[in-house]
Amino acid sequence: MIGLTLKHLRYFDALARQQHFGRAAEACAISQPALSLQIKELEGMLGAPLVERTARQIRLTGMGEEFLRRTRPILLAVEELEDLARASKGPLSGRLRLGIIPTVAPYLLPEIITAVSQRFPDLELELRESVTRTLIDDLLDSRLDVAIVALPISEPALREFALFSEDFVLVRPPEDAAKPVPNADMLQAMRLLLLEEGHCFRDQALSFCKITEKQPRQVMEGSSLSTLVQMVSAGLGVTLIPEMALALETRSADVAVARFPAPGPSRTIGMVWRKTNPLSEQLMQIGAIVRGVGQAKRDTIISTRF
Image 1: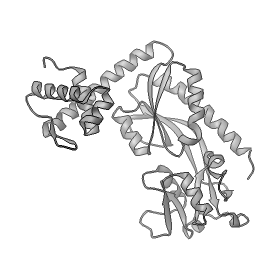
Image 2: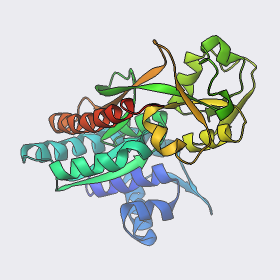
Image 3: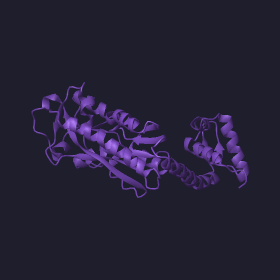
Image 4: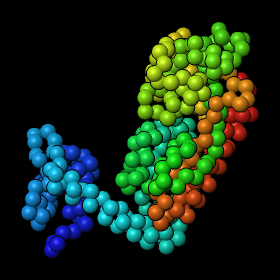
């Protein structure tokens, strides 16, 4: 098609993702009138409308949906060609879009940024924190290059690279400190504080306690591990948190912490990226750096008595 450019495809893709001309223009770093003009030009070349325009948002037409379905593989292929060129130049440089789950980000991200920046000084990390499902969708749609999540993911299009494992610990009111550590069956009878739905850590805690979402139980939810620990401090129940969160989340909370007897609950943290990504070798190097950061953190925690 004469006149069709990658710029047209990228602008249309941004509009489809944002569902709003203003936000899409901001994401593309251009003015809203310029973006609108490019979309109208694209529609003129195609001879059919791609979007339905309303005052608040846009909706894709049937043609728009089909055009988007065919556009995204093209953009992904172009991006992988660009990554192939980056991989041939030696040390990793430029932008790298890294996703990370909320139950890891606050506890490892500062050390990860420092360590990666020292190894790859010309690399610009673009960070995104979100729940696992969103990160995986962003990877598959090429909105992210790599993500740090709990394994396994079991997505055929993604490569998994294990980093380290960590235990879950029990956080309970201080008056319970001398009591025996409850097993999974005992936890079912307690008021268990959990993260909101969508967090993989919630599912892992429920799995250890052998609780299904359909079972009636006394439960309260929080939006973060910090909220859960403060809820325990207020006497509202007990919770499980990953051991890497201990130092940060319990320093200002009046709680008791206990380890579960083996075999206790645990998780494996890893990195995932698209199998087709030409930067796979460099991503493994970054994975080795993150693994070292995680293991150093875990060694420090294990040496701490509580």
